[in-house]
Image 1 (cartoon, each protein chain N blue to C red):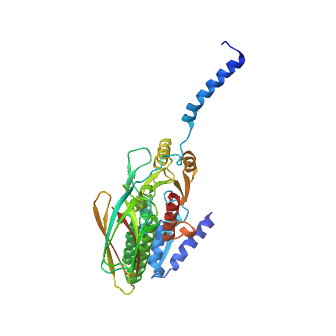
Image 2: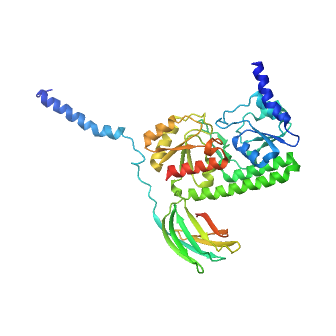
Image 3: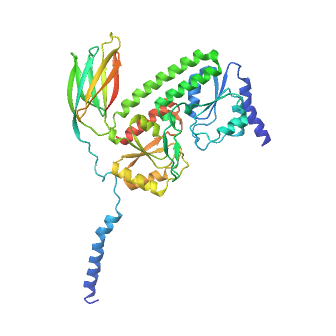
Amino acid sequence: MRGSPLFRAFLVFCAILSLGYPLHRLTQTTTVADAVPLLTKTQKIGLLLTFTTRPDSIRVSHLGKEVWSEMGVNGLLKKELFLPYPKEGIDLAFDLQWPASSSIAAMRVNFTGPDGESIEKSIWGSGDVSEVLTFP
Amino acid sequence: MKLLTIFLLLVVVLPLEAASEETLRVSTFSTILTELAEQIGGDKVQVTGHVKVGIDPHDFEPKPIDLIVVGKADVILLSAKHMEGYVEKLKESTGTRGELVEVGDGFKSLKMESNDGSEKVVEDPHWWHSLANMGMAAKGVRDALIRARPNASETFRANAANYLQRLDLLKKWAKSELAKLPRDQRKLVTSHDAFQYFAKENGFTVYAIEGISNSDQPSSKKVAQIIATVKTQGVKSIFSESIENPKVLTAITRETGAKLGGKLFADGLGENDAATYDGMYRHNVTTIVKGLQ
């Protein structure tokens, strides 16, 4: 090998440096934090609620957060919500307050998913009622 | 040694002999069944739980002293679904004067692939992680106690109704807690494969590192698969269990960056807040929600 010792040392240094990046790529570990975040698309869902007895109040929560509430309900209720909707479905928590004097009451939930398909489910109870419904 | 054996026999057998004619002697082979027998039987039963808290039921083998007690029992409650590999030994050596009730055989099994590398399909014995199964088990135990002591049926029916009501409240609470977790994040990575019934009831997918028993050792291929799953699915936490060596789990967390989500009770009741079924179930749900949120 020709050239000054300094030049030769520089060439060796460059060669080692050029190996650094592929070596780093081969040996690095991907952590959960580095993984591509699994973002769930927000989509439109529809709720149509009908009652045998009008509740004093109703609250709908998704993932522990309130997404809709109504006081002094008159007749049926209709609402469109935009929520993250994975293919596994969603849980909606309903908190209802029916008049304490009323006998057993019911609420019919007509749920329309992002694909336009409707599902119906019911909640029965009296007084304060909390229930989670899973859709679809 | 002889003296010790005689002493142990006296300690175990004498109280049984002293039990009144009316008291039903019940032997159980899981901490879950001990609770069911005690809660439903109330003061009409004397329950001997042969598998104590902290003992791995997969590895439990009855000792001679257990066989003596079982021989005198009126009702013997077993988890079934192949949890008690010694059931034939129990039948043969005790003559089973009492009725042997295989509680878990009263409802449908979940099947899963064996973790021993073979294509074998095995029955999952951890049925108590389903609240629906627990309800059926409570009814099964109630009926077995009534068959053995019909004149106490009123007590057994009332106690069972009370227990079922508590299970209903627990179910409502669990649903509301689990509703905090998006359904696409319900990936449960656990050390041994004990949560399939829980998963089915609550919309989870289980990725177990070991097989059905704690003593099953994971292959390096299996560990690599779990690491890939944790990374691609973005699983935030993996869970260890009350009876086990968490070395493999620690290695997976190091490799993936996922955190250890805490200990779950897989094979029965535990101590402190997990000393009852209600407490154990609440502990597991709270730990899972906290870990995956």
